[in-house]
Image 1 (cartoon, rainbow, N blue to C red):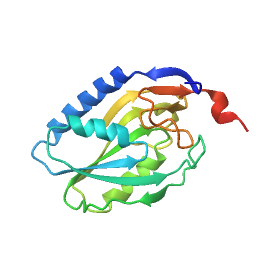
Image 2 (image 1 turned 120 degrees about the vertical axis):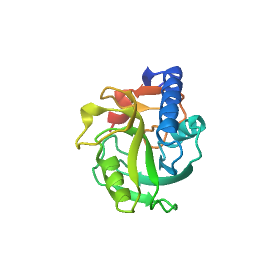
Image 3 (image 1 turned 120 degrees about the horizontal axis):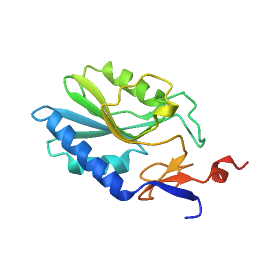
Image 4 (image 1 turned 30 degrees about the vertical axis):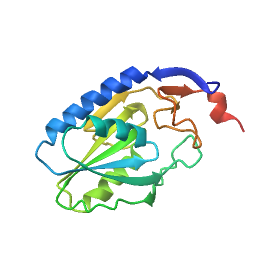
Length: 179
């Protein structure tokens, strides 16, 4: 693909990580009521793969938030586009996200959901970019740590495109810096 500089994380690496995370989550929540909240749009592919690896019954719901728009940098302002429909009171909540970058969006979601009376709120992310973190955010189920590169694929996009690439790829700089 002409926008890809290189593959950063292979499909095989992603599959292995998802398998491990699914097994851990299944063990940790055995016998408990778990609501998994996928963060749209980026988290949907990871969530679909992860849900098939979790062996306990779960309730699935989604939130859609925006802090990027069509930019390559987070604005830091979190806009909730779609909220959860499920009542999370007295239940364990696991937020499933594609990538943690600055942590601002996810920190906002964690704090928001905690106000709704859940037993716990934990975080699971396919990818983690700790070098960009701006807040102290606990990632309970951390996927693959990546360097500070602009990545696409496996649900991650640039201006709404490239989510369907099976690997996590570095986007060529000239794609997102052109005026």
